[in-house]
Image 1 (cartoon, rainbow, N blue to C red):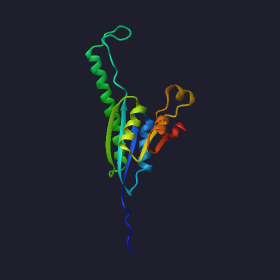
Image 2 (spheres, rainbow, N blue to C red; image 1 turned 180 degrees about the vertical axis):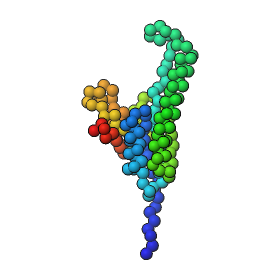
Image 3 (spheres, rainbow, N blue to C red; image 1 turned 90 degrees about the vertical axis):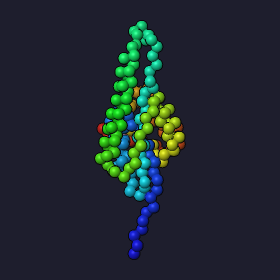
Image 4 (cartoon, helix red, strand yellow; image 1 turned 45 degrees about the horizontal axis):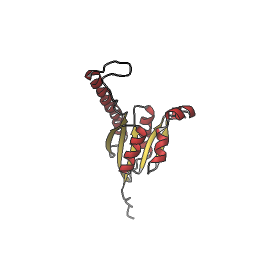
Length: 165
């Protein structure tokens, strides 16, 4: 009897990552539960930096911003990107070597940027972590994952960290 070979199907998954433990847990969960041996997997790590601040020569309190301060803030932002993506790559390295990992870094309001990029690249799934905010915090801060679940054109998996349940 001949062994049946499963046809490999392409699967593109976007995981939104940030500095939080919740997003890193969502990435781990994705690698454990959504990555399959019967697919050719492409995992896209999406990080959205806050929009760059716009400075005038004087701030509200009348202090002058020097070029050194602005450069220091930009360096900090770049270091943060490298830190988050480094942590995410370490997690990917622990799970599987046959996953093709791509990184996308953008800047702006997270909920809008994630929706725009996800709708442009058309993945099979978007995976996001949940910060587990309560009703009042979500009402004031808004929920990026709730917004994305309503506005992207693909299935969305929102992963809750077990300690937040």
